[in-house]
Length: 141
Image 1 (cartoon, helix red, strand yellow):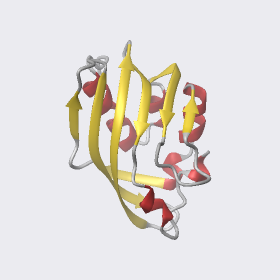
Image 2 (spheres, helix red, strand yellow):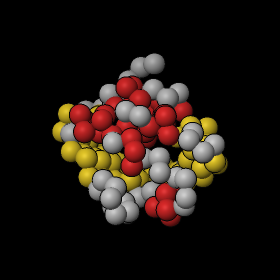
Image 3 (cartoon, helix red, strand yellow):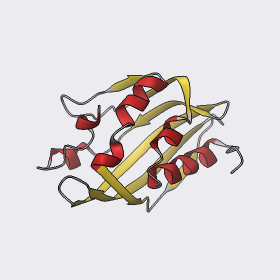
Image 4 (cartoon, helix red, strand yellow):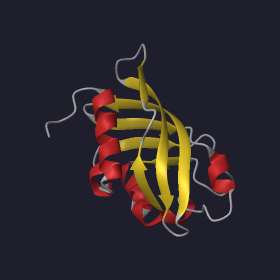
C-alpha cells in the first residue's frame, strides 16, 4: 500500500492495522515525539503517553486483551486545520480474558504531520472499563 496521503487516510489505515493485530505497524505510524492523551482515563490509568516508545510500550500487549472485529459508525470530520481531524466511532469485538463482548464508543482529535500521528486525544468511554472483567488496557502497560 502506498503511504496515506491525508490525516483521514492515515487514520483509516491505522484502523486496518488494529483489526489485523499489527501493533508494530500501528505504532510505526507515530512521530518520535508523538503524544497520546486520554482525558477521561479512570484513576490509575495513564492520562498521557509521551513519545513513540511510550506509546509502543503501552500498546504492545493490546491484542492479548482486546480482539477487535470492526469499527462501525466511523465518521471522520475535517477541521479548519488541514492536519487535524475529529473522529467518531465504535470499536466492537471481545475481551480476550473473559470472552465478553466489547462495544466501546470513541471520539478522537488527531493531528498528523509528515504522514505520522503527532497528537491523539482519545475520548473513549471509561464506563466500559469500570465493569467487572474489563481490565484490558491498564494491564497492557
